[in-house]
Length: 271
Image (cartoon, rainbow, N blue to C red):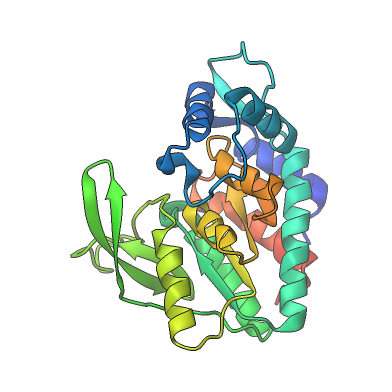
């Protein structure tokens, strides 16, 4: 069983927390864009009130451990590993409750290159515990605005985890799916589940638009977020995201495996 101390050391060693790859410039730019209600950074959250960049910086300092000094404008950002651990505990506790109820769940990721394995392990554990892992709207087209303009993607599921693929990109080449921040895929999935007569998920587990889009629609949502993703932390502060776990969401996929073991052990879902 992975101890809390061992996991903390791992977080720092592989830079999931501590000094992370996300730059201070990128994070501060995201806070400015969020304050301006840029949909690229809102990723599905419609804030109840206006958030000034300085307020967002204070929130991110509180929830993630980034520097609260507005004059600190360059270098690498920092995540407090103890805040990550506390959030992982809360994340695991929500999994335990849902598993105990054998409630339906929906999992999805906008970071399939990095986080797919993490979610697949959760999906398999929850399924083994008796939860229905939902896969609504499989194959449905979703039009997503990208830096290259509007692009059509297809909603797909890999071992119970939702993601989107660009048309013509198959499994043979090893492409796990497309990176996206959009909340549109989860909206399409939830609408399809509702139109089909249910069941609807009692918990949505995911990052980016999957967590924010579901939370905005009133579904309980939990997931990880980097220092340049203030939407999940605002959603948590305003009561629409249940748990936001601060960590670097773009390190090598195998670096998340100890987190998976820790979370499943705490939730009593290990096999």
